[in-house]
Length: 252
Length: 324
Image (tube, rainbow over all chains, first blue to last red; front, side, top):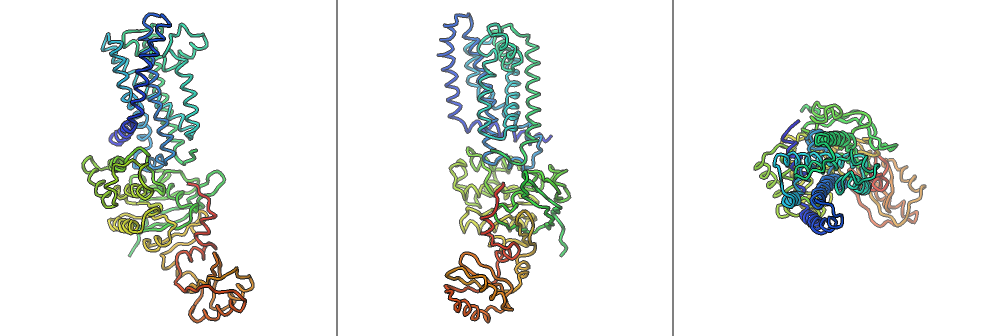
Protein backbone atom coordinates (compact mmCIF):
# COMPACT_ATOMS: atom_id res chain seq x y z
CA UNK A 1 0.00 0.00 0.00
CA UNK A 2 1.29 3.44 -0.95
CA UNK A 3 1.49 5.33 2.35
CA UNK A 4 1.68 8.74 0.68
CA UNK A 5 -1.58 8.05 -1.14
CA UNK A 6 -3.11 6.77 2.10
CA UNK A 7 -2.06 9.98 3.85
CA UNK A 8 -3.62 12.08 1.06
CA UNK A 9 -6.95 10.25 1.29
CA UNK A 10 -6.99 10.65 5.09
CA UNK A 11 -5.95 14.30 4.80
CA UNK A 12 -8.80 14.97 2.36
CA UNK A 13 -11.40 13.61 4.76
CA UNK A 14 -9.93 15.45 7.72
CA UNK A 15 -9.77 18.74 5.81
CA UNK A 16 -13.43 18.35 5.06
CA UNK A 17 -14.35 19.20 8.67
CA UNK A 18 -13.04 22.73 8.21
CA UNK A 19 -15.83 23.21 5.64
CA UNK A 20 -18.47 22.63 8.28
CA UNK A 21 -17.45 25.32 10.79
CA UNK A 22 -20.98 26.48 11.56
CA UNK A 23 -22.25 22.93 11.86
CA UNK A 24 -19.47 22.09 14.31
CA UNK A 25 -20.02 25.19 16.41
CA UNK A 26 -23.74 24.40 16.67
CA UNK A 27 -22.94 20.80 17.53
CA UNK A 28 -20.60 21.89 20.35
CA UNK A 29 -23.19 24.37 21.58
CA UNK A 30 -25.79 21.62 21.60
CA UNK A 31 -23.43 19.47 23.64
CA UNK A 32 -22.71 22.17 26.24
CA UNK A 33 -26.42 22.97 26.65
CA UNK A 34 -27.30 19.30 26.83
CA UNK A 35 -24.80 18.74 29.66
CA UNK A 36 -25.32 22.04 31.49
CA UNK A 37 -29.12 22.12 31.33
CA UNK A 38 -30.57 18.70 30.61
CA UNK A 39 -27.76 16.76 32.31
CA UNK A 40 -27.99 18.86 35.46
CA UNK A 41 -31.79 18.72 35.61
CA UNK A 42 -32.01 14.99 34.95
CA UNK A 43 -29.35 14.19 37.54
CA UNK A 44 -31.36 16.13 40.16
CA UNK A 45 -34.48 14.29 39.09
CA UNK A 46 -32.82 10.88 39.21
CA UNK A 47 -31.16 11.59 42.54
CA UNK A 48 -28.55 8.96 41.80
CA UNK A 49 -25.14 9.95 43.17
CA UNK A 50 -22.62 10.70 40.46
CA UNK A 51 -25.22 10.53 37.67
CA UNK A 52 -24.26 13.94 36.32
CA UNK A 53 -20.72 12.73 35.55
CA UNK A 54 -22.10 9.43 34.24
CA UNK A 55 -24.39 11.37 31.90
CA UNK A 56 -21.71 13.85 30.77
CA UNK A 57 -19.34 11.02 29.78
CA UNK A 58 -22.14 9.14 28.06
CA UNK A 59 -23.37 12.06 26.01
CA UNK A 60 -19.82 12.66 24.78
CA UNK A 61 -19.73 9.09 23.44
CA UNK A 62 -23.11 9.66 21.75
CA UNK A 63 -21.75 12.87 20.18
CA UNK A 64 -18.67 11.04 18.94
CA UNK A 65 -20.90 8.37 17.42
CA UNK A 66 -22.96 10.95 15.49
CA UNK A 67 -19.82 12.69 14.32
CA UNK A 68 -18.21 9.45 13.07
CA UNK A 69 -21.39 8.52 11.23
CA UNK A 70 -21.14 11.79 9.30
CA UNK A 71 -18.71 10.20 6.82
CA UNK A 72 -21.67 8.20 5.46
CA UNK A 73 -23.55 11.42 4.67
CA UNK A 74 -20.44 12.83 3.02
CA UNK A 75 -20.03 9.77 0.81
CA UNK A 76 -23.71 9.88 -0.15
CA UNK A 77 -23.39 13.56 -1.05
CA UNK A 78 -20.19 12.93 -2.98
CA UNK A 79 -22.02 10.28 -4.96
CA UNK A 80 -24.77 12.78 -5.76
CA UNK A 81 -22.15 15.21 -7.06
CA UNK A 82 -20.38 12.44 -9.00
CA UNK A 83 -17.22 12.76 -6.91
CA UNK A 84 -17.13 8.99 -6.34
CA UNK A 85 -16.50 8.42 -10.07
CA UNK A 86 -13.71 10.98 -9.92
CA UNK A 87 -12.09 9.27 -6.91
CA UNK A 88 -12.36 5.89 -8.64
CA UNK A 89 -10.61 7.25 -11.74
CA UNK A 90 -7.56 8.48 -9.82
CA UNK A 91 -4.19 6.72 -9.69
CA UNK A 92 -4.94 5.45 -6.19
CA UNK A 93 -5.32 1.79 -5.32
CA UNK A 94 -8.92 0.94 -4.41
CA UNK A 95 -7.82 -0.59 -1.11
CA UNK A 96 -5.85 2.54 -0.18
CA UNK A 97 -8.86 4.69 -1.00
CA UNK A 98 -11.22 2.58 1.09
CA UNK A 99 -8.97 2.19 4.13
CA UNK A 100 -8.06 5.88 3.95
CA UNK A 101 -11.71 6.86 4.03
CA UNK A 102 -12.41 4.69 7.07
CA UNK A 103 -9.37 6.02 8.95
CA UNK A 104 -10.03 9.60 7.83
CA UNK A 105 -13.68 9.37 8.85
CA UNK A 106 -12.70 8.05 12.27
CA UNK A 107 -9.93 10.56 12.90
CA UNK A 108 -11.92 13.55 11.87
CA UNK A 109 -14.77 12.59 14.18
CA UNK A 110 -12.35 12.66 17.09
CA UNK A 111 -11.01 16.04 15.94
CA UNK A 112 -14.51 17.40 15.47
CA UNK A 113 -15.36 16.55 19.07
CA UNK A 114 -12.20 17.83 20.77
CA UNK A 115 -13.93 20.81 22.50
CA UNK A 116 -16.66 18.59 24.04
CA UNK A 117 -13.96 16.08 25.03
CA UNK A 118 -11.90 18.77 26.79
CA UNK A 119 -15.05 20.13 28.43
CA UNK A 120 -15.91 16.65 29.72
CA UNK A 121 -12.39 16.08 31.04
CA UNK A 122 -12.44 19.43 32.84
CA UNK A 123 -15.91 18.83 34.20
CA UNK A 124 -15.24 15.36 35.57
CA UNK A 125 -11.49 15.51 36.10
CA UNK A 126 -8.89 12.87 35.36
CA UNK A 127 -7.79 10.49 38.10
CA UNK A 128 -5.25 8.38 36.22
CA UNK A 129 -3.71 9.73 32.96
CA UNK A 130 -2.61 6.23 31.84
CA UNK A 131 -6.09 4.83 32.14
CA UNK A 132 -7.35 7.90 30.29
CA UNK A 133 -4.98 7.19 27.39
CA UNK A 134 -6.51 3.70 27.14
CA UNK A 135 -9.94 5.27 27.20
CA UNK A 136 -9.09 7.68 24.38
CA UNK A 137 -7.74 4.76 22.34
CA UNK A 138 -11.08 3.02 22.80
CA UNK A 139 -12.81 6.18 21.60
CA UNK A 140 -10.65 5.99 18.46
CA UNK A 141 -11.71 2.37 18.01
CA UNK A 142 -15.35 3.36 18.32
CA UNK A 143 -15.02 6.17 15.76
CA UNK A 144 -13.19 3.92 13.24
CA UNK A 145 -15.83 1.24 13.67
CA UNK A 146 -18.71 3.68 13.29
CA UNK A 147 -17.09 5.26 10.21
CA UNK A 148 -16.78 1.70 8.81
CA UNK A 149 -20.45 1.07 9.65
CA UNK A 150 -21.40 4.31 7.88
CA UNK A 151 -19.41 3.33 4.78
CA UNK A 152 -21.03 -0.13 4.89
CA UNK A 153 -24.54 1.33 5.01
CA UNK A 154 -24.05 3.94 2.31
CA UNK A 155 -22.32 1.40 0.03
CA UNK A 156 -25.17 -1.06 0.43
CA UNK A 157 -27.99 1.42 -0.09
CA UNK A 158 -26.44 3.69 -2.75
CA UNK A 159 -29.06 6.29 -1.95
CA UNK A 160 -28.87 9.51 0.08
CA UNK A 161 -32.51 9.36 1.15
CA UNK A 162 -32.38 5.73 2.23
CA UNK A 163 -29.09 6.36 4.04
CA UNK A 164 -30.69 9.29 5.91
CA UNK A 165 -33.65 7.19 7.01
CA UNK A 166 -31.65 4.12 8.03
CA UNK A 167 -29.02 6.12 9.92
CA UNK A 168 -31.81 7.93 11.78
CA UNK A 169 -33.35 4.60 12.77
CA UNK A 170 -30.01 3.09 13.82
CA UNK A 171 -29.18 6.23 15.79
CA UNK A 172 -32.45 5.93 17.72
CA UNK A 173 -31.78 2.32 18.71
CA UNK A 174 -28.00 2.16 19.09
CA UNK A 175 -27.83 5.06 21.54
CA UNK A 176 -30.89 4.12 23.60
CA UNK A 177 -30.05 0.42 23.79
CA UNK A 178 -26.65 1.14 25.33
CA UNK A 179 -25.29 2.30 28.67
CA UNK A 180 -24.68 5.80 27.30
CA UNK A 181 -27.47 7.33 29.42
CA UNK A 182 -28.30 4.68 32.00
CA UNK A 183 -26.60 1.63 33.55
CA UNK A 184 -27.40 -1.86 32.38
CA UNK A 185 -28.75 -2.74 35.82
CA UNK A 186 -31.74 -0.43 35.25
CA UNK A 187 -32.65 -1.83 31.84
CA UNK A 188 -35.28 -4.49 31.10
CA UNK A 189 -33.64 -7.85 30.32
CA UNK A 190 -34.27 -7.64 26.57
CA UNK A 191 -32.70 -4.19 26.38
CA UNK A 192 -29.67 -5.12 28.47
CA UNK A 193 -29.04 -8.15 26.23
CA UNK A 194 -28.63 -5.75 23.30
CA UNK A 195 -26.59 -3.32 25.39
CA UNK A 196 -24.03 -6.06 26.13
CA UNK A 197 -23.11 -6.34 22.43
CA UNK A 198 -23.52 -2.63 21.67
CA UNK A 199 -20.18 -0.92 20.88
CA UNK A 200 -21.43 2.34 22.40
CA UNK A 201 -21.84 0.58 25.74
CA UNK A 202 -18.22 -0.51 25.75
CA UNK A 203 -16.87 2.82 24.55
CA UNK A 204 -18.85 4.58 27.28
CA UNK A 205 -17.68 2.07 29.89
CA UNK A 206 -14.01 2.45 28.97
CA UNK A 207 -14.29 6.23 28.77
CA UNK A 208 -15.84 6.36 32.24
CA UNK A 209 -13.10 4.07 33.50
CA UNK A 210 -10.55 6.51 32.09
CA UNK A 211 -12.27 9.38 33.87
CA UNK A 212 -12.21 7.48 37.15
CA UNK A 213 -15.96 6.85 37.31
CA UNK A 214 -16.22 3.16 36.37
CA UNK A 215 -19.67 1.63 36.50
CA UNK A 216 -18.17 -1.78 37.20
CA UNK A 217 -20.79 -3.48 35.06
CA UNK A 218 -18.31 -4.79 32.47
CA UNK A 219 -14.82 -6.24 32.53
CA UNK A 220 -12.54 -3.65 30.82
CA UNK A 221 -10.78 -6.39 28.85
CA UNK A 222 -14.12 -7.67 27.57
CA UNK A 223 -15.09 -4.13 26.59
CA UNK A 224 -11.77 -3.58 24.81
CA UNK A 225 -12.11 -6.85 22.89
CA UNK A 226 -15.69 -5.98 21.89
CA UNK A 227 -14.64 -2.56 20.62
CA UNK A 228 -11.66 -3.94 18.77
CA UNK A 229 -13.84 -6.58 17.13
CA UNK A 230 -16.37 -3.93 16.17
CA UNK A 231 -13.74 -1.61 14.67
CA UNK A 232 -12.00 -4.37 12.72
CA UNK A 233 -15.14 -6.04 11.45
CA UNK A 234 -16.90 -2.82 10.43
CA UNK A 235 -13.81 -1.33 8.78
CA UNK A 236 -13.15 -4.57 6.86
CA UNK A 237 -16.79 -4.93 5.86
CA UNK A 238 -16.98 -1.26 4.85
CA UNK A 239 -13.81 -1.56 2.79
CA UNK A 240 -15.11 -4.75 1.12
CA UNK A 241 -18.48 -3.25 0.23
CA UNK A 242 -17.00 0.05 -0.91
CA UNK A 243 -14.83 -1.90 -3.33
CA UNK A 244 -17.70 -4.07 -4.56
CA UNK A 245 -20.48 -1.53 -4.74
CA UNK A 246 -19.00 1.85 -5.54
CA UNK A 247 -18.10 1.09 -9.14
CA UNK A 248 -20.74 1.41 -11.80
CA UNK A 249 -22.97 4.23 -10.61
CA UNK A 250 -26.57 3.27 -9.82
CA UNK A 251 -27.00 5.95 -7.14
CA UNK A 252 -30.43 7.27 -6.41
CA UNK B 1 5.06 7.03 -40.35
CA UNK B 2 4.39 3.89 -38.30
CA UNK B 3 1.66 4.25 -35.76
CA UNK B 4 1.99 2.49 -32.43
CA UNK B 5 -1.27 1.29 -30.97
CA UNK B 6 -1.78 2.98 -27.59
CA UNK B 7 -5.22 1.58 -26.84
CA UNK B 8 -6.62 -1.64 -28.23
CA UNK B 9 -10.32 -2.09 -27.54
CA UNK B 10 -11.73 -5.56 -28.23
CA UNK B 11 -15.40 -6.46 -28.01
CA UNK B 12 -16.01 -3.91 -25.27
CA UNK B 13 -19.61 -4.24 -24.10
CA UNK B 14 -21.68 -2.83 -21.28
CA UNK B 15 -25.20 -3.72 -20.25
CA UNK B 16 -27.15 -1.75 -17.63
CA UNK B 17 -29.74 -4.35 -16.74
CA UNK B 18 -31.25 -5.24 -20.11
CA UNK B 19 -30.14 -2.02 -21.77
CA UNK B 20 -27.16 -2.41 -24.08
CA UNK B 21 -25.19 0.82 -23.66
CA UNK B 22 -21.99 -0.24 -25.45
CA UNK B 23 -22.19 -2.94 -28.08
CA UNK B 24 -19.01 -4.95 -28.78
CA UNK B 25 -16.75 -2.08 -29.74
CA UNK B 26 -13.48 -2.91 -31.49
CA UNK B 27 -11.14 0.02 -31.91
CA UNK B 28 -7.44 0.92 -32.02
CA UNK B 29 -6.27 4.33 -30.88
CA UNK B 30 -2.76 5.34 -31.86
CA UNK B 31 -0.03 6.92 -29.79
CA UNK B 32 0.02 10.70 -29.96
CA UNK B 33 -3.22 11.15 -31.85
CA UNK B 34 -6.29 13.14 -30.96
CA UNK B 35 -9.10 10.68 -31.38
CA UNK B 36 -12.58 12.18 -31.55
CA UNK B 37 -15.45 10.07 -30.33
CA UNK B 38 -18.44 11.74 -31.90
CA UNK B 39 -22.00 10.91 -31.02
CA UNK B 40 -25.18 12.25 -29.50
CA UNK B 41 -25.99 12.03 -25.80
CA UNK B 42 -26.84 8.45 -24.89
CA UNK B 43 -24.78 6.99 -27.74
CA UNK B 44 -22.44 5.20 -25.32
CA UNK B 45 -19.48 7.62 -25.33
CA UNK B 46 -19.28 8.22 -21.60
CA UNK B 47 -19.88 4.56 -20.72
CA UNK B 48 -17.02 3.57 -23.03
CA UNK B 49 -14.73 6.13 -21.43
CA UNK B 50 -15.69 5.10 -17.89
CA UNK B 51 -14.75 1.52 -18.75
CA UNK B 52 -11.38 2.68 -20.12
CA UNK B 53 -10.68 4.61 -16.93
CA UNK B 54 -11.71 1.53 -14.87
CA UNK B 55 -14.48 3.43 -13.10
CA UNK B 56 -16.97 0.83 -14.29
CA UNK B 57 -16.39 -2.78 -15.28
CA UNK B 58 -17.22 -4.04 -18.78
CA UNK B 59 -19.87 -6.73 -19.12
CA UNK B 60 -17.87 -8.32 -21.93
CA UNK B 61 -14.64 -7.64 -23.78
CA UNK B 62 -11.71 -5.57 -22.64
CA UNK B 63 -9.15 -2.98 -23.62
CA UNK B 64 -5.38 -2.93 -23.45
CA UNK B 65 -3.86 0.45 -22.68
CA UNK B 66 -0.09 0.67 -23.09
CA UNK B 67 0.06 -3.07 -22.49
CA UNK B 68 -2.17 -3.07 -19.41
CA UNK B 69 -5.54 -4.80 -19.41
CA UNK B 70 -8.34 -2.68 -17.91
CA UNK B 71 -9.87 -5.79 -16.34
CA UNK B 72 -6.78 -7.45 -14.92
CA UNK B 73 -4.50 -4.48 -14.23
CA UNK B 74 -6.80 -1.55 -13.41
CA UNK B 75 -4.32 -0.02 -10.94
CA UNK B 76 -1.64 0.15 -13.66
CA UNK B 77 -4.14 1.61 -16.12
CA UNK B 78 -5.08 4.41 -13.72
CA UNK B 79 -1.43 5.38 -13.43
CA UNK B 80 -1.32 6.30 -17.13
CA UNK B 81 -4.83 7.54 -17.79
CA UNK B 82 -6.80 10.57 -16.67
CA UNK B 83 -10.26 11.84 -17.39
CA UNK B 84 -12.04 15.19 -17.31
CA UNK B 85 -15.68 14.29 -16.88
CA UNK B 86 -18.62 15.65 -18.83
CA UNK B 87 -20.30 16.79 -15.60
CA UNK B 88 -17.75 18.51 -13.33
CA UNK B 89 -17.05 16.32 -10.31
CA UNK B 90 -16.68 18.92 -7.62
CA UNK B 91 -17.87 18.61 -4.04
CA UNK B 92 -19.96 21.69 -3.38
CA UNK B 93 -18.10 22.93 -0.27
CA UNK B 94 -14.62 22.75 -1.80
CA UNK B 95 -12.81 25.53 -3.64
CA UNK B 96 -11.00 25.10 -6.99
CA UNK B 97 -7.71 25.66 -5.17
CA UNK B 98 -8.36 22.90 -2.60
CA UNK B 99 -9.66 20.49 -5.23
CA UNK B 100 -6.77 21.00 -7.63
CA UNK B 101 -3.91 21.10 -5.11
CA UNK B 102 -5.14 17.79 -3.68
CA UNK B 103 -5.50 16.42 -7.20
CA UNK B 104 -1.95 17.52 -8.06
CA UNK B 105 -0.59 15.78 -4.96
CA UNK B 106 -2.44 12.57 -5.84
CA UNK B 107 -0.89 12.78 -9.31
CA UNK B 108 2.58 12.86 -7.78
CA UNK B 109 3.45 16.53 -7.32
CA UNK B 110 5.04 17.46 -3.98
CA UNK B 111 3.80 20.39 -1.83
CA UNK B 112 5.31 23.51 -3.44
CA UNK B 113 5.44 21.93 -6.87
CA UNK B 114 1.74 21.09 -6.63
CA UNK B 115 0.82 24.67 -5.81
CA UNK B 116 2.95 25.99 -8.67
CA UNK B 117 1.38 23.77 -11.32
CA UNK B 118 -2.12 24.54 -10.04
CA UNK B 119 -1.40 28.26 -10.15
CA UNK B 120 -0.06 27.96 -13.69
CA UNK B 121 -3.05 25.99 -14.98
CA UNK B 122 -5.65 28.14 -13.20
CA UNK B 123 -3.97 31.19 -14.66
CA UNK B 124 -4.09 29.76 -18.19
CA UNK B 125 -7.77 28.94 -17.80
CA UNK B 126 -8.60 32.41 -16.42
CA UNK B 127 -9.64 30.86 -13.12
CA UNK B 128 -7.03 32.34 -10.78
CA UNK B 129 -9.35 35.02 -9.40
CA UNK B 130 -12.06 32.44 -8.70
CA UNK B 131 -9.71 29.98 -6.98
CA UNK B 132 -11.12 30.52 -3.49
CA UNK B 133 -14.80 30.46 -4.36
CA UNK B 134 -16.70 27.39 -3.28
CA UNK B 135 -17.86 25.04 -6.00
CA UNK B 136 -21.52 25.95 -5.51
CA UNK B 137 -20.66 29.62 -6.15
CA UNK B 138 -19.09 28.91 -9.55
CA UNK B 139 -20.89 29.26 -12.87
CA UNK B 140 -21.30 26.21 -15.14
CA UNK B 141 -18.40 27.34 -17.33
CA UNK B 142 -16.13 27.89 -14.33
CA UNK B 143 -16.91 24.43 -12.96
CA UNK B 144 -16.11 22.97 -16.35
CA UNK B 145 -12.76 24.78 -16.38
CA UNK B 146 -11.89 23.33 -12.97
CA UNK B 147 -12.80 19.87 -14.24
CA UNK B 148 -10.56 20.07 -17.28
CA UNK B 149 -7.79 21.75 -15.24
CA UNK B 150 -7.37 18.36 -13.54
CA UNK B 151 -6.08 16.85 -16.79
CA UNK B 152 -3.77 19.75 -17.59
CA UNK B 153 -2.26 19.27 -14.13
CA UNK B 154 -2.05 15.49 -14.36
CA UNK B 155 -0.74 15.44 -17.96
CA UNK B 156 -1.31 11.68 -18.28
CA UNK B 157 -0.12 9.45 -21.10
CA UNK B 158 -3.75 9.01 -22.11
CA UNK B 159 -5.95 12.05 -21.51
CA UNK B 160 -9.70 11.70 -21.91
CA UNK B 161 -11.80 14.82 -22.35
CA UNK B 162 -15.54 14.20 -22.19
CA UNK B 163 -17.24 17.18 -23.86
CA UNK B 164 -14.54 19.57 -22.66
CA UNK B 165 -15.99 22.81 -23.95
CA UNK B 166 -19.70 22.42 -23.25
CA UNK B 167 -20.86 25.51 -21.27
CA UNK B 168 -17.66 27.37 -22.22
CA UNK B 169 -17.74 30.64 -24.16
CA UNK B 170 -16.22 30.89 -27.65
CA UNK B 171 -12.89 32.46 -26.67
CA UNK B 172 -12.59 29.92 -23.83
CA UNK B 173 -13.21 27.10 -26.28
CA UNK B 174 -10.33 28.25 -28.51
CA UNK B 175 -8.03 28.54 -25.52
CA UNK B 176 -8.90 25.02 -24.35
CA UNK B 177 -8.49 23.58 -27.85
CA UNK B 178 -5.02 25.14 -27.92
CA UNK B 179 -4.19 23.58 -24.56
CA UNK B 180 -5.40 20.18 -25.74
CA UNK B 181 -3.17 20.42 -28.82
CA UNK B 182 -0.26 21.46 -26.58
CA UNK B 183 -0.88 18.44 -24.35
CA UNK B 184 -0.75 16.19 -27.38
CA UNK B 185 2.45 17.81 -28.59
CA UNK B 186 4.00 16.96 -25.22
CA UNK B 187 3.31 13.28 -25.87
CA UNK B 188 -0.16 12.56 -24.56
CA UNK B 189 -2.67 10.56 -26.56
CA UNK B 190 -6.00 12.34 -26.44
CA UNK B 191 -9.51 10.93 -26.57
CA UNK B 192 -12.02 13.68 -27.16
CA UNK B 193 -15.65 12.68 -26.67
CA UNK B 194 -17.95 15.29 -28.08
CA UNK B 195 -21.28 15.94 -29.69
CA UNK B 196 -19.98 19.19 -31.18
CA UNK B 197 -19.25 18.54 -34.84
CA UNK B 198 -16.98 21.53 -35.31
CA UNK B 199 -14.89 20.59 -32.29
CA UNK B 200 -14.44 17.03 -33.55
CA UNK B 201 -13.66 18.27 -37.04
CA UNK B 202 -10.94 20.78 -36.20
CA UNK B 203 -9.25 18.92 -33.34
CA UNK B 204 -9.31 15.25 -34.26
CA UNK B 205 -6.80 13.34 -36.31
CA UNK B 206 -9.37 10.56 -36.54
CA UNK B 207 -13.01 10.41 -35.61
CA UNK B 208 -15.09 7.44 -34.51
CA UNK B 209 -18.79 7.99 -34.94
CA UNK B 210 -20.63 6.20 -32.16
CA UNK B 211 -24.32 5.49 -32.42
CA UNK B 212 -26.44 3.19 -30.24
CA UNK B 213 -23.33 1.83 -28.57
CA UNK B 214 -21.58 0.89 -31.81
CA UNK B 215 -18.86 2.49 -33.90
CA UNK B 216 -20.75 3.40 -37.07
CA UNK B 217 -17.81 4.93 -38.96
CA UNK B 218 -14.11 5.50 -38.40
CA UNK B 219 -11.50 7.60 -40.13
CA UNK B 220 -9.97 11.05 -40.45
CA UNK B 221 -12.56 13.84 -40.75
CA UNK B 222 -11.64 14.39 -44.40
CA UNK B 223 -11.70 10.66 -45.18
CA UNK B 224 -15.11 10.34 -43.56
CA UNK B 225 -16.46 13.25 -45.60
CA UNK B 226 -15.03 11.66 -48.74
CA UNK B 227 -16.99 8.51 -47.97
CA UNK B 228 -20.23 10.32 -48.70
CA UNK B 229 -21.25 9.60 -52.28
CA UNK B 230 -21.63 12.89 -54.10
CA UNK B 231 -19.09 15.51 -53.19
CA UNK B 232 -21.54 18.38 -52.60
CA UNK B 233 -24.46 19.08 -50.34
CA UNK B 234 -27.41 21.12 -51.55
CA UNK B 235 -29.67 22.40 -48.79
CA UNK B 236 -32.99 23.79 -49.94
CA UNK B 237 -35.40 25.36 -47.47
CA UNK B 238 -38.97 24.78 -48.54
CA UNK B 239 -42.34 25.93 -47.28
CA UNK B 240 -43.86 22.50 -46.72
CA UNK B 241 -43.13 18.82 -46.51
CA UNK B 242 -41.90 17.41 -49.82
CA UNK B 243 -44.16 14.55 -50.94
CA UNK B 244 -42.65 11.12 -51.42
CA UNK B 245 -43.15 11.11 -55.22
CA UNK B 246 -41.15 14.35 -55.59
CA UNK B 247 -38.38 12.93 -53.45
CA UNK B 248 -38.34 9.92 -55.74
CA UNK B 249 -38.07 12.21 -58.75
CA UNK B 250 -35.15 13.99 -57.13
CA UNK B 251 -33.46 10.69 -56.31
CA UNK B 252 -33.91 9.68 -59.93
CA UNK B 253 -31.55 12.46 -61.07
CA UNK B 254 -28.34 10.56 -61.95
CA UNK B 255 -26.01 12.97 -60.11
CA UNK B 256 -28.02 12.72 -56.86
CA UNK B 257 -26.94 9.94 -54.55
CA UNK B 258 -29.17 10.63 -51.56
CA UNK B 259 -32.06 12.83 -50.48
CA UNK B 260 -33.05 13.55 -46.89
CA UNK B 261 -35.41 15.98 -45.28
CA UNK B 262 -35.58 17.50 -41.80
CA UNK B 263 -36.59 20.77 -40.17
CA UNK B 264 -38.15 22.13 -43.38
CA UNK B 265 -34.91 21.57 -45.30
CA UNK B 266 -34.39 19.10 -48.08
CA UNK B 267 -30.78 17.91 -48.47
CA UNK B 268 -29.36 16.46 -51.65
CA UNK B 269 -25.99 14.74 -51.71
CA UNK B 270 -24.81 15.03 -55.26
CA UNK B 271 -22.09 15.73 -57.78
CA UNK B 272 -21.93 18.87 -59.96
CA UNK B 273 -24.31 20.75 -57.70
CA UNK B 274 -23.99 24.03 -59.66
CA UNK B 275 -25.26 22.38 -62.85
CA UNK B 276 -28.06 20.41 -61.24
CA UNK B 277 -29.37 23.22 -59.02
CA UNK B 278 -31.58 24.94 -61.66
CA UNK B 279 -33.37 21.73 -62.60
CA UNK B 280 -33.95 20.82 -58.95
CA UNK B 281 -35.43 24.23 -58.16
CA UNK B 282 -37.52 24.09 -61.32
CA UNK B 283 -38.90 20.69 -60.33
CA UNK B 284 -39.89 21.92 -56.88
CA UNK B 285 -41.50 25.09 -58.22
CA UNK B 286 -43.42 23.13 -60.86
CA UNK B 287 -44.89 21.03 -58.04
CA UNK B 288 -45.94 24.25 -56.24
CA UNK B 289 -43.33 23.91 -53.51
CA UNK B 290 -41.98 27.32 -52.63
CA UNK B 291 -38.21 27.53 -52.31
CA UNK B 292 -37.22 29.88 -49.45
CA UNK B 293 -33.44 29.61 -49.72
CA UNK B 294 -30.70 27.52 -51.27
CA UNK B 295 -27.30 26.70 -49.80
CA UNK B 296 -24.51 24.80 -51.46
CA UNK B 297 -21.67 23.48 -49.31
CA UNK B 298 -19.06 20.82 -48.64
CA UNK B 299 -20.16 17.87 -46.48
CA UNK B 300 -19.67 18.21 -42.71
CA UNK B 301 -19.36 15.55 -40.03
CA UNK B 302 -23.09 15.96 -39.49
CA UNK B 303 -23.59 14.76 -43.06
CA UNK B 304 -21.26 11.88 -42.30
CA UNK B 305 -23.31 11.09 -39.20
CA UNK B 306 -26.50 11.25 -41.26
CA UNK B 307 -25.00 9.06 -43.95
CA UNK B 308 -23.99 6.32 -41.54
CA UNK B 309 -26.88 6.44 -39.07
CA UNK B 310 -29.82 7.69 -41.10
CA UNK B 311 -30.40 10.70 -38.83
CA UNK B 312 -28.71 13.97 -37.97
CA UNK B 313 -26.88 14.25 -34.68
CA UNK B 314 -29.60 16.58 -33.41
CA UNK B 315 -32.31 14.06 -34.28
CA UNK B 316 -30.27 11.33 -32.61
CA UNK B 317 -29.92 13.51 -29.48
CA UNK B 318 -33.69 13.58 -29.23
CA UNK B 319 -33.91 9.79 -29.35
CA UNK B 320 -30.94 9.03 -27.13
CA UNK B 321 -31.22 7.38 -23.73
CA UNK B 322 -29.04 9.14 -21.21
CA UNK B 323 -27.40 6.63 -18.93
CA UNK B 324 -24.30 8.04 -17.31
